[in-house]
Image (tube, rainbow, N blue to C red):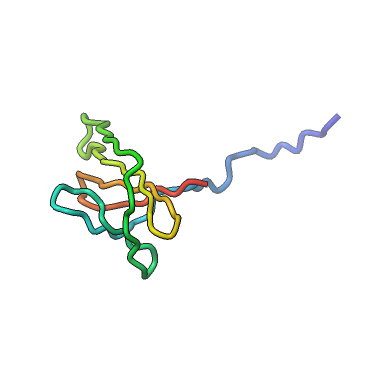
Length: 96
């Protein structure tokens, strides 16, 4: 049997995992990404694998409106980025 230490068990320090990070994107006049700056290097977009839009929480003061892009980049890299339409900024969604 395990003794009761009478300590409360909490979640401790909670931090989000794989949160989005700001990224610099050069887009064409239609908003399609052409180059993505990863670190100090501009990387050309070779292909768009997928594109989708998220409109959520429309009832809040700041709704969520994002246009996501799943990209094939030069050098064999892939990236998922989104344009935050409300705040007019680009973010990179990091997985894993």
